[in-house]
Length: 216
Image 1 (cartoon, helix red, strand yellow):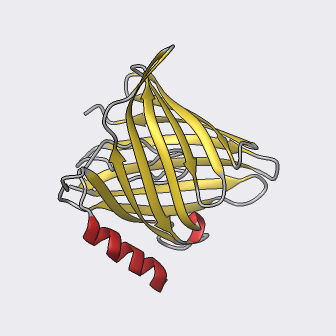
Image 2: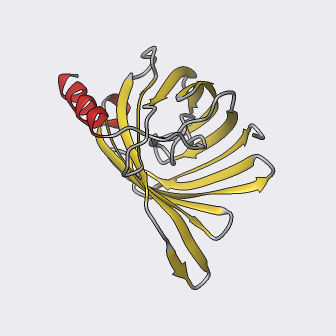
């Protein structure tokens, strides 16, 4: 834990973030596919969702909800049930550091599974939006973001991800969750409703989720 505390202190001194809209990951906390990002819900914003993760070893179903409590503070809960075992409820929290830096970095510190139902996982993560985009044959790839973090517990050290918008609607994502590579996409299918699909665990497993968010 001392190593993690040192990394948190260094990153906190190096950058302060701007808040941004965030969508839930497949296990609940806002982020990409499985990893958290330095983005959070605004005050009184919320989302709820459900997902299924299917793998060779077991299938997991999850229900989750998140809400922006104060400026920069998001809290949430996830209830995950692996196939053949009982369900566990995780309480999660994320805090955005409040001041932007010239490099437009965002920094968040958070904890997944605060009550240690399975494995308490503190983390720090930095996100940055790159300028410009790429023009592809089938549409523009815009708003590219890079996310890098360090955590313990379920996050297992260094994690990182990239995300971008393909065309006007589709968000594409790639990440390393501390042990495996995951690839996926998120698509709005109706007002305030998003569907996320992903190849997980080194592309051996599959996950799909649907979420509904606040309309403001």
